[in-house]
Length: 156
Image (cartoon, rainbow, N blue to C red; front, side, top):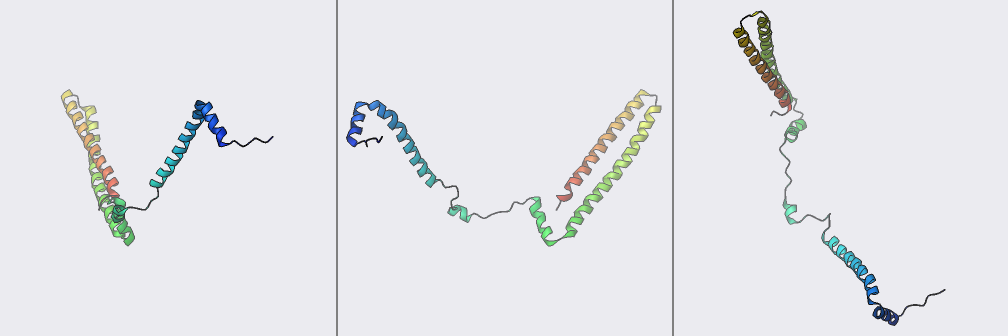
């Protein structure tokens, strides 16, 4: 069965006979068409990969002044002495602090041993106070060693 082709007169008669039915179809379809054109226009204006404008073209690229970029100069020159100087300096510092910690530990052991034989409560409190001071200084020295080890690659 072949459907007859609608003519313009029949279409106008239908709109006049049932205007609300026509608007139910016409308004959503017009909204879709206008939305499509709005998207097309905005996509032409907002290109994501557009050429840089004049201000961006004149902008110079600056390398950040962080540790890796400053050390890269020595790497390119193959300057081994620079790295060895940093290692020697930090290892000297670590050796000095380690000797200090060893002497403090010997002192700590002597005082700890002495506490067991002291009978005076006042003397025990004084020795315990010395023990806490020694442990605090040992912890402070240990913290310095850790900082020296961490600063190994960050010194200039």
